[in-house]
Image (tube, rainbow, N blue to C red; front, side, top):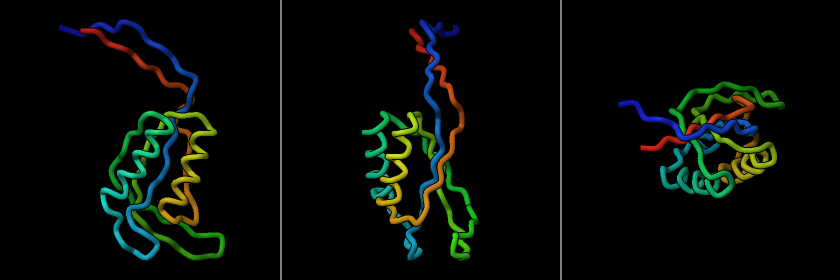
Length: 115
């Protein structure tokens, strides 16, 4: 039997993707506990996040240095001010020279279901 939704609401709030490094600048792998502390900070700011599987990125810094690193894409539903706060926190938490994030969509639809 299909569940019925009780209501749906379109939120005018974007979903962002931010990339979190798997390793430090000294090539040491971050522990799960270290990532979980970052996750908790994001949850405090936004109420939730969706963590993807690791991907490999290549980029060249403004001074010409080439970086190849594994990153974790994380989707977060929040406003622009919140994602900038999260970017700043991410740069500090992971000691990053740069943090990349982008808007995935501008609107979120949430359907609430009842039994």
